[in-house]
Image 1: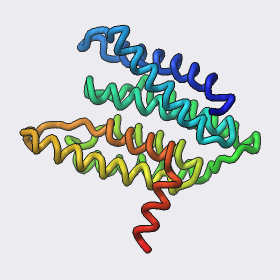
Image 2: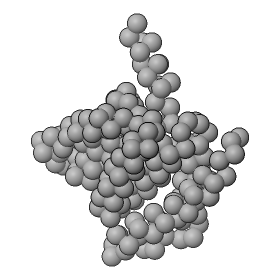
Image 3: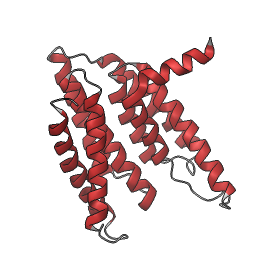
Length: 220
């Protein structure tokens, strides 16, 4: 256990609690207020993600940016799963703050790659934007913004992490769609894609390097 794990855990608890409130303010016209238990569980899950990122070690600034991203991804996944919405009130500020934090990290000579971050945003977000234009029923603009955020943050650590997030997102989305069909949902039923994108992105944030190695080993 690392010395910084406790501050990360406390920050994650507070951040998760805050994000549940933001989601509720977005959907309160159509959804009941989350119970204290629901909000506490989300906060604890976010705290767990923060600790997971902290345990990876590495630069403190980069770890803080990555941890915040995992918390945002979790909140967006929960919102899309329960309410079928990925709130702009979270995605837009997250994009701006993440870009500013990464720029500040680069100026401070922290281990971030701004060029790869920009390429990740364009490749992942732009790729899903094209998909959303072609098949709007299967992919929404909220998904595009989530992918752009993942491409930006994960790309700052290398484009391999973006590839892992995208690959897992597509794979998990396909599995989820298959399970939904097996359970009787029709092809016209709209299945939220955000949770699968978020799961792939969180997995990449925590285990991008080992997952890359597994994939490359299968190509040999």
